[in-house]
Image (cartoon, rainbow, N blue to C red; front, top):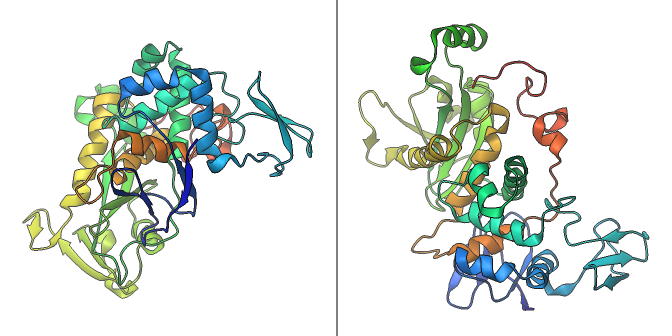
Length: 371
């Protein structure tokens, strides 16, 4: 299938690996792993043709799931098994259970074939503004709700929990900002506007906080419940190394960062947007990309699903092609395929029936959401 390689991690949780043509760094990684290299398509058209063969799609999925062909049972972790070729599954002699390449991944319990999964993963990883479930359902010939569930499971695979903090002695300055996502009350019907303003206050919107490391050009973002000082500064303490230079706007919640051992500089957007190196234009660029996808492609996003859409945009931004890191569509697909294992998202969790998986406490309770 391919030759197995192990490459050292970068200081930013990335994985440095050598391809056939150039040295490329797949960022957004936080664990040691190995990735096998194989002949993969370079374009969407080639990917559709390549993965239309069930056997080829199966072999590709196996190689990304178990690099080098070292298949282990996802339930007990043992390698004592037999392969049933006609059904493309294994039988484990230890736990006495059958398993397929989908078990233990975001694809588990999915009736959709690997050919559809591969194309969906390719498109979501590489379409700059995302792809709607309606568009994907037409492209794959499946129902819209199936495409919606499929896309959210791919977004689950895009998640990353970095263990290395941003900034520090080896990192560059970090830009921090927050943005509001939601409807414009100006264009609401007056009864809906009055109802939401009375229920949610002056800003019936979801809040996203983000940080951009200028040295690594990596973004981390998540939905936060409010913009209080404790909330924003706790997020900074969690993600940014003490002693780092932090650039923010003049929002009062960022005050006293210097007392937390940060070098803090602000820019007041009432008077100016850039003062030398002090600005937040980098993270503002990410906000523009995020909102372009939300407003142009997805149109309406429920607040308790918003964090997954933010994760999707973070993945594409952190793995975009740059002069120093010339990734292509095939590289992003390979990286995302290497992350599908060890993650699971059920329909109950996604729709709010499992309270442990929710961001919004109102989700699944029948109460009205902000938008």
